[in-house]
Image 1: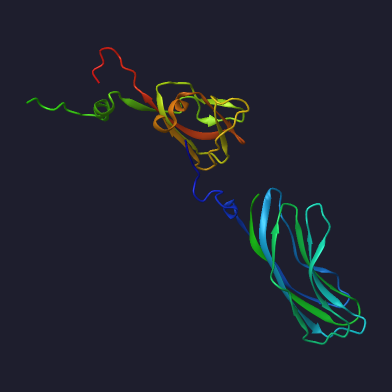
Image 2 (image 1 turned 90 degrees about the horizontal axis):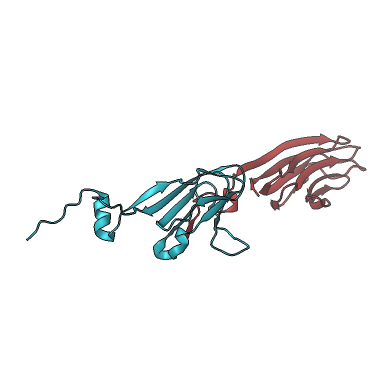
Length: 141
Length: 125
């Protein structure tokens, strides 16, 4: 017997009905502002995703004596607890122009897994800018 | 010296080379594989080869029923997977009954059988 499989169809995982995952933005938040999501992505049912996240952050207005800011990537596996992948942390009195760039983080995600990149700044004084997002491919499980 | 016998058709050539003509038959049992296990090739000792092409968007399981329990299958993949066999490689397995089972909704398939033309008394071809 001879069995032949069609070329280009399900011969590799990324050939399975692929679609692009691309999401990101630029955020500018002053002290005391609400938390903002740079990315909030959940893999749909019956899909998997192979993605990369990255961002850059900058202190636009020097932080006050009681103000800290952070940009945090949290990965929550389906049915599991959130895991902190990386945090850009700016402590009190951080000077204008201070920067932090995250590494490029490669994620292989299954259905229901979630990734968020969240900006937070305490009340007080200062402002923080944040740019970046997520990019990759989603495909049938 | 005698003149060579003329060959006007493929059937003439088959007769000369193999001593018997054979011909194609398409989708004799079904054109769509349903969700339940269904016969796709009847037992037929005149069948010498077959090709089954999965034209649907779902995988199909193809079972040679000559095996003992539990029965296992070949899997012609969705969107163009092919299973083929011929008597020269597989012997009498080709002429036995085969069944198929679709992975989801009725799946369109092409089933091509190559059958020996039985000799008919008085036939001139």
